[in-house]
Image (cartoon, rainbow, N blue to C red; front, side):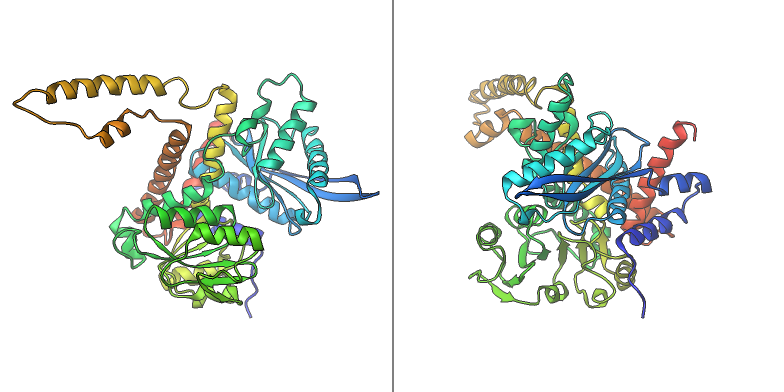
Length: 474
């Protein structure tokens, strides 16, 4: 029986597949491969009348660009190998979407559900203290973000802790991203990874040649979609493709099982149900299936795994029927399963690209914090004034009896509206996702030895990291 590689081994295998097709010196290949450093911190917090000791990690994979960037996850599954593998993925992800960061990742072995809010704040602040005093949280060196088990709340605590310890740092707000709007955050960050998944799918569907490889035609409209995980990423991806692109989300898989409706699920109502009850069971507008994992194997056009690593593996890969899989989570397909699926003709849009929306918008937030001004503040009204001048002139021409036209109120209101921060963020994210996809598909289509998009993504990313190291004289 073939044994399943670990998440760390899967990342290494995928790295090896790419570098075999590249012209890198052995020394440079090894430099890019290895994790530069991993810090393990163990700290105590007095809670409920006794001292509890927690273990946390912050791993720095590559400092070819600084600061390094990567989320902090709170989970009982956190361990060193996982954190180092995720840090490596961050390096390649940032290189692919051309966000000017190296790769990092952090984690704290804790179950957030076991502690109340005040206790979580004490634990988070102490973990942040341990990292900040080692410069493992710093606007110019290491910039965390939310990940599994963390969100805006934890980022607000961390940035406040950093300010307390660095009272004269004018750029303190840039020490983490994913903050609440009122603490220096940016519009569109919460939805960013799910929005990036939508933009990735839209870009894929622009190319007939790519759709043909997945045995798909047309647009996203009426495509049958299955989503695994209705957390932040899965919820937003499902909501956007169903509400804005007309896809049918026919099944959602959660920790307690799955809910299926061939006519399409109402994602907003389902999310409210999951928030209230903790699962999809008893959702009235669909059939509940207790064995949620089996729903991964249902017929569909697009499968979106948006939760944990390794959900598609050697045990179920040969039964997956989706034409197209887009990895909204980190590492949902193991390297062994990846090989089986590619050989079956399934097209996989890899996590390296598909869930890079979060770090892309984090980059925008970091830039906003360093510039100390929100996007759109300087130019929005000036845009509107210039557009008004043009409309006035068009209206004047339209008043000529020989022409006699009138602009619709709908057109005028849309044209006159200057872009606000959210629109600019979405525009920047769309541009980043489109450019990254084009760089991947160029390698995928122009080289006979590149069988899939994942290998293409690794080649593009590793080559950019290598170019950065070469420019430093390595």
